[in-house]
Image (cartoon, helix red, strand yellow):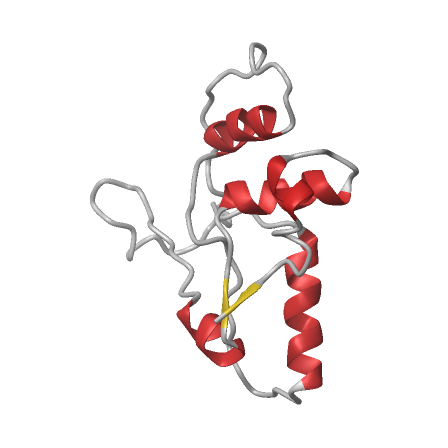
Length: 128
């Protein structure tokens, strides 16, 4: 799963409105992906909290009952990937990694991360 601060979604909406974009499919996701477990561990590290109580578990992708599973791969695992190149090319921006997004969240909530101090995250998206 790709995780992003909601500010990135707001910025993409703002750019789309300002540029009068219509009839486009835009995938919005972080540059990298990780499991919920990996995200929780990273979240604790970025926010300076203990990850001692975080345990790995199994989260199943929700399936609709009675759906046709003829297209299910033999191993039973589906793979999904967001194609963010169309958004980056259209708006001439670089989407962040999950860690960069968490640093922005920390800065917005009053944290004192290194990137927040340097002003590196003031605009959210990095322009090409």
